Image 1 (cartoon, rainbow, N blue to C red):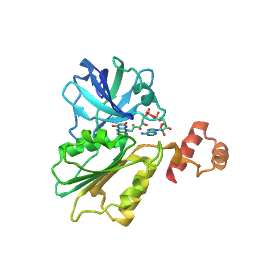
Image 2: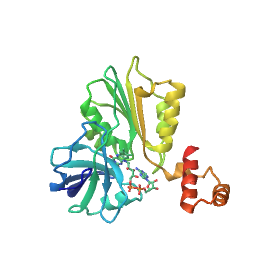
Image 3: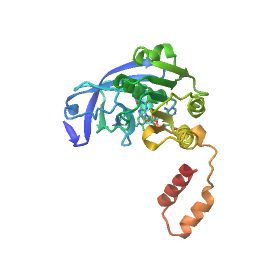
Image 4: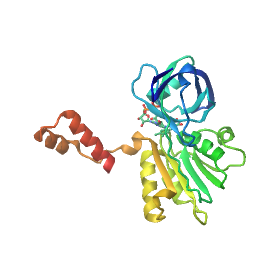
Length: 260
Ligand SMILES: Cc1cc2nc3c(=O)[nH]c(=O)nc-3n(C[C@H](O)[C@H](O)[C@H](O)COP(=O)(O)OP(=O)(O)OC[C@H]3O[C@@H](n4cnc5c(N)ncnc54)[C@H](O)[C@@H]3O)c2cc1C
């Protein structure tokens, strides 16, 4: 039974620890009856877990027509992390309608995929869905010998280790890539500051047109957002003088920090 046209309730029917930081959750139940996959291999859903109202986004690793599989990174602390780390089987969750972004041009002759552990589910599903030669760079905190089994056999994968827990150095890795000849497609996802740096690199150094790449910020690292580049004092005083509410002032502050 759908709760609204774009939302579905589901039960956690199975939980499997794939590696120390990756948990597979299989959702099922009658609430998923109306769920329809977009077929786009990096499609994601919003997930709302018990006792919460905010959603977090997760890639649809697979949809069988009755069961929806999500692979969830369990990191230090977080709404979904803490829930998924525990005994969540039997819990009822809400998932939103799926959306996807991967749009490889028909004439692409190769595909490059770059991502951290949060992007591994999407990279695995993308690998399963394409026929062009594909190279993968995966930055993971767990043993590649364990995680490699989740990519199709024969995937050409370079495994990278994060510089520290909760940190990423994928932007530097992208600068080292030797690009194939001809027209292809570049897909990447991971920590937002890394993604911003990579977008600049693709535009300014590689001169790629927009249709040749898709780079998505999947999560924001605290460490890379510090120290704050924006002094809130002047913004707060100016906001108050202009008669803005505190919410409006802090929204402007957040936007200013994101712009840097
Ligand atoms: C389109 C899309 C698809 C995604 N697909 C997946 C997926 O398939 N699997 C998956 O695990 N994630 C995926 N993500 C990322 C996931 O939504 C975020 O990591 C989310 O913040 C996790 O929620 P949380 O409740 O665990 O932590 P939050 O409550 O959101 O965050 C708590 C703290 O943890 C930090 N944090 C958040 N994520 C991470 C992380 N991965 N590593 C280290 N620190 C982190 C935050 O900075 C914050 O300080 C996807 C995101 C998007 C936008």
